[in-house]
Length: 52
Image 1 (cartoon, rainbow, N blue to C red):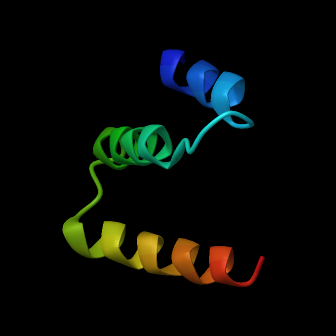
Image 2 (cartoon, rainbow, N blue to C red; image 1 turned 90 degrees about the vertical axis):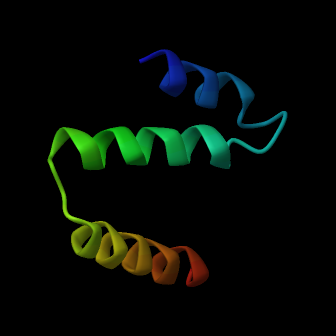
C-alpha cells in the first residue's frame, strides 16, 4: 500500500514508473507467475500503453 500511496502522491510531480514496476513484480510473485507469463503480460501492457 505504501508504494501505491507514493505513486498517487507523486504522479503529478515526477515519474512513477519505477514504483509501478516494483508493484508489478510483487503481483507477479504473489501469483507465482512464470517468466513466460510475465513476459506475455508485459508485452501486452506495452502495446496498450503505445495506443494511449
